[in-house]
Length: 215
Image 1 (cartoon, rainbow, N blue to C red):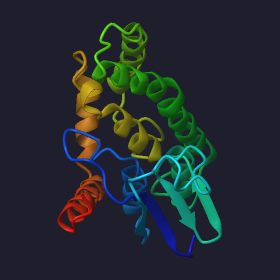
Image 2: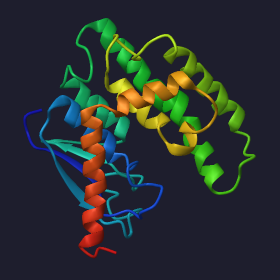
Image 3: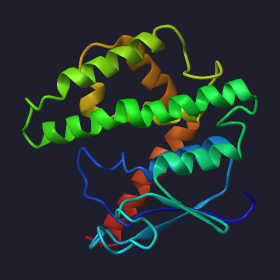
């Protein structure tokens, strides 16, 4: 991956508790920082965002990625693409790589698939939404795993931790229940310099849009 790496996001999002600091281009920024990859950030307009970039992202979402001739969407797929090129993100030995891959998929398919609809229904006032028991079960499984290890795969930080921590750090999810091992995991993961820089850069990006009079 020697050609120009471009991470695409929105030019602006509203201020408040969310989504600033949680827009998923942060995942790609964070991965690039961990891997020591140079990159630039480009944007699509917030207005008409559902339809103004369907040629690049068929669901009208961000982020999407340009890596030379490679164009990709879906943050998980983009993370795996970056990890394939960086041992900092994914081990090269077959066992470590397999462990990392399984936990990346677990973050997306076993955890985020329930946490996202749960918090969406919760913030829209549907607190009795039928998903709480399912989410509690999944979070309890993760708590058990994290009580026994510091990192999910290969006895070190990998892209699987990056993704799982990003899923678990969402405010409502993080505050839900008493899960000390999970909280310690989130804290040590987002205390990494690469996360701090990626987060600060995203916040600065949207703050600059405010000052420029985008809204």
